[in-house]
Image 1 (spheres, rainbow, N blue to C red):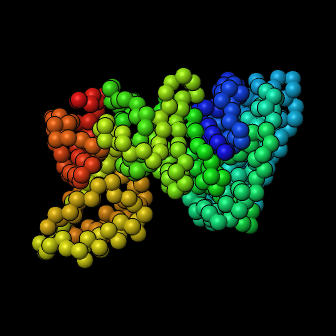
Image 2 (tube, rainbow, N blue to C red):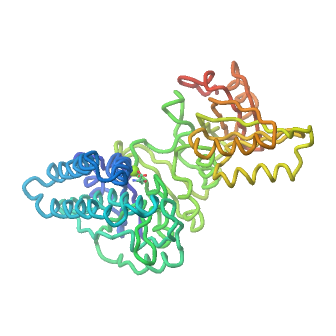
Image 3 (tube, rainbow, N blue to C red):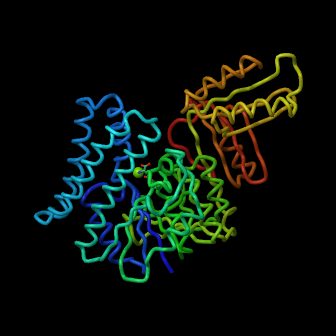
Amino acid sequence: MTQVFKFGGASIQDAAAIRRVGELLARFRARPLIVVVSAMGKTTNALETLLAAARAGETEEYRDRLETLRQEHLTTVEALFGDRAGPVTERVEALITELDQLHRRHASRERPFHYDQTVCYGELLSTTIISAWLDEAGMATEWLDARDLVVTDDCHQAANVDWQATVERVRGLATDDDKIRVTQGFIGGTTEGVSTTLGREGSDFSAAILAHCLDAEEVTIWKDVPGLFNADPRRFDNAVQLERISYDEAIELAWHGAKVIHPKTLGPLQQKSIPLTVRSFEDLEAPPSTIGRDTRFDTQTPSLVLLEEQTLLEIRSRDFAFMDEPRQHDILGRLVEAGLHASLIDAGAMRLSLCLDDGHPDRLEPLVSSLCADYAVVRHEDLTLLTVRHADDALLAALSAGRDSLAERRNADTAQRLFPSTQCQGTWHIPL
Ligand code: ASP
Ligand code: MG
């Protein structure tokens, strides 16, 4: 049965990293194997800036940025292939030329469309280099264009998968020889052959789509951390690795803001009971973390998520009327229209409180203005939302000590508390 491996930007950021991927594949390669790859390092960010410059009229800044992108990729090719770099250099140059030329056709189109035509080159470049490197290292590969495999609608920058069409295309893939199939994460194509993208950090999702369509045995995401943790190790000094959690638990953690896995990834795998393993490419002996059907271990370790830059809106009706269902319906309808997600909703008799991310002022400010026109709104800013899964009262009390909670919510397995960010700085310790 097919295995799917996914390598993110950090695992292929330069020649040394790509060599390491080659060594890893030589050692762990499964048969048949599909390798899904992101853009190298921070290339997607660089392409976003390039796009802005292209839309501003192909200025000098545009030329500089394109040249930097070109040089970065050619330097990697040079470092990998040395005096055998010729054919790969040519392919990279051809992609850069295509990228340069497409703006002339698309600069007058809407930005999301132009975005997808531009940004997909990050993955096209990385997979071209990696596929050639694996060939060079003696592993036969086949380079596949994900735009022909992952069929989507034309909702640019957040394309939706056409599952039926995708299954048909992916099932048509030959997998019965010894080749490693290398393809791009994050990108897809419409039935008309127009490039689309699945949303930032979407390569995990791509791996899951292919695995789903192939009824794969397992998906492995190779990362620069040993696996999944019960809290962000950069914020919590005693975070521990979770070796086994269920799909539902992982979805809950991702939903509450843990940067574990792209949230859309787990659904397609859960439907087919395909396990997802997260492993370190830096420490091949480290025990991995596996997300699967087994729910037995979910409640053993409490998990914590901190979400920063939150804003709380306390909404009351002006005439002291109850915050009844029609009013809740009205307020939540406006939230949906604004395209925002509430990280916490807390309803009382006279009040509805919404905790929202500060990161989208272009959506948040119009929503606040619209609410202020019809309701009495109190706004608190600069807050941090703590979510704890499987907490007991003692743990919650200890985490809240010395912190003022502005809003709370709790159900059988999840507790949330909203604190002023000034009380949440620095490193946390999980009081066990
Ligand atoms: N390269 C894309 C991004 O940086 C997709 C991914 O990395 O998963 O968003
Ligand atoms: Mg990336």
